[in-house]
Amino acid sequence: MKQWYEELFENYGMKYDKENFVQGTIGECDFIEKEIGYDKAARILDIGCGTGRHSIELTKRGYHVVGIDLSESQLKRAKEKASAQNLQIVFQKHDARNLPFSHEFNLIIMICEGAFSLMETDEMNFRILRNAANALLPKGKLIFTTLNGLFPLFHSVKDFLDSKTKEGNAKCGSLSFDLMTFRESNTIYVEDDLGNKKELQCSERYYVPSEITWLLKTLDFKTIDICGAKLGAFSRNDKLSTEDFEMLIIAEKQ
Image 1 (tube, rainbow, N blue to C red):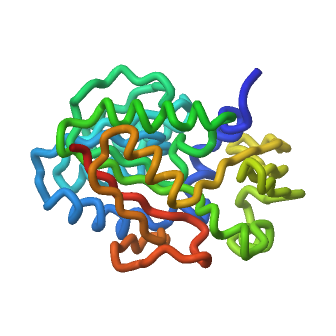
Image 2: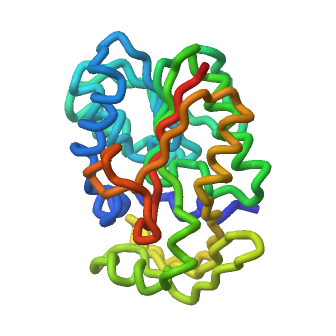
């Protein structure tokens, strides 16, 4: 049986590119470039690349990027966009829980819940982090965003999601948050690129900073910085607070 995140992204490339949460690419790539010291020799892996927005923007800026995703239709859209701009980018279908890379990349990015935190179990989510760690070269960096577990303790997630939804975006129905597992379960209603209407039961894991720090330390990351993740305006100066729906993690290998 297909998981909700597999069903959601089937024939959803065009609609996905119109979603509110994917509009911050330029500013996010500015931050990524700065983090690797504008080193054009850096090899970059984009896990959960979706329709390729970060891979394409970084390639345009002169970087060598490999984009991977589980969704064939998202990858198809990524390839179409790259080819329309005459960009040569390697886009491959891989499951982030089972990656073939070993000590190959200077930087790995997983932006906007690219795989991590969408999985059914904590063990699966951890496997994604472990595979990312294995794919990095010594002193390599992992930059990713994930849902901030501090937010639901103080706010209604449903109110927040409703306030960010525009006409034509996926809509959130009923929603519950389990304090024992830090999992949000919700129903989303979405119409794909072909006009098919879908109702999906979703489950996502929120993490608190201490969990992320511990998980990354077990994977031999030596410095771990956690900030608030502002759409299109990532900055180390944004101290994480209970107001941030997402957090931004910058971790460096030994």
